[in-house]
Each structure stands twice: as structure tokens, then as C-alpha cells.
Length: 163
Ligand code: S3P
Image (cartoon, rainbow, N blue to C red; front, side):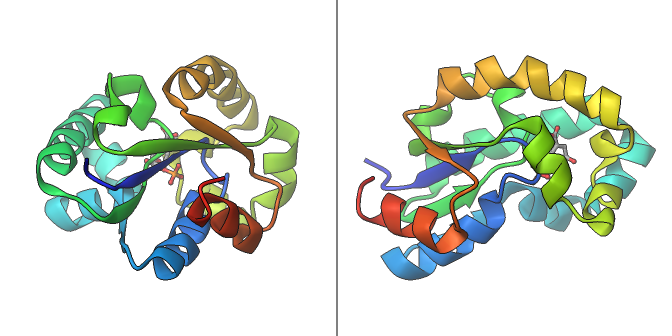
């Protein structure tokens, strides 16, 4: 067993914040799929979308998921919000934890600069449509679902204690 924990959820649900705290608590490595892709393409996600388009980005996510599944253990992995749309079996990478949040709560929570770095969040109505289409996918992949409105510390504690 890989002993990885894979955090999934929509943009802004707190995956990276929770993941960092959780990794510290459990003595695991913290990995963020967006940062890993940025390092391999030497470009910010936003620029990559602009230059190469979403389909190419999804291909990178797919390749990365395969690599993580074969090479990584003992890590907390925060995934980009769209990864469950292209990866069939996130459970083969590790235990999948879904940080669930309502769309309107997200809007209240995201700051302006966070909208800017996310290419799919440039238009709120468009983002809402994506959100609605994603929820069933997150639910399908989730082995555990937690309320993302709890504090990051509480979420990390719950996950580290095995929920
Ligand atoms: C995306 C989410 C982003 C990033 C990219 C696409 C999505 O990650 O991978 O902008 O399709 O939901 P975060 O969920 O970390 O913001």
C-alpha cells in the first residue's frame, strides 16, 4: 500500500493549505500536482493554459497521475480541481479525501488574486457550470468526504486521526 493521501475538491476548497498541515502532522511529504506540472513545463499554470490549451494540460495531469501511482509513497498529494475528470482511478494513488464545499461559499472565500491565477475561474457563471459537472465526479472518487468549511487545522487533524 502506498500510504499516500490524495486530496480532491474544487478550486479554492483548501486542498493545498490542508495538505501542508496534514503532511507536517503525519511526517509525510507534501506534493501539489499543479506545482509539479509547473516545474516540469517551466511555466505557471495560467501561462500554460494560454499557450498550450486545456487539453494539453489535462494530458500532463494524466501522465503525472500515472507517475505518482508508480513512484510515490508516504505523501500527501493535493490535486488540481480537474484531475478527477481525466484520471480514472485516483484510489490507486492513495486514500482519496474529498474536501466538499458549496459554490457560493467558495465565492465568498476566494480572494481576487486567487481568481486571477486560475484560468477556469475567470467567469463566475462558467465556473459554476464546471462546478456542477464536477460534483458527481468528486463523489465518485471520494473514499472519505469532509466539510471544507471546517478550519484547515481541524481537517488535517481529522484526516491524520483516520477521520
Ligand atoms: C483546475 C484547477 C486548478 C488548476 C487548473 C485547472 C480545474 O487547480 O489545476 O487551473 O480544472 O479545476 P486548483 O484546484 O489547485 O486551483
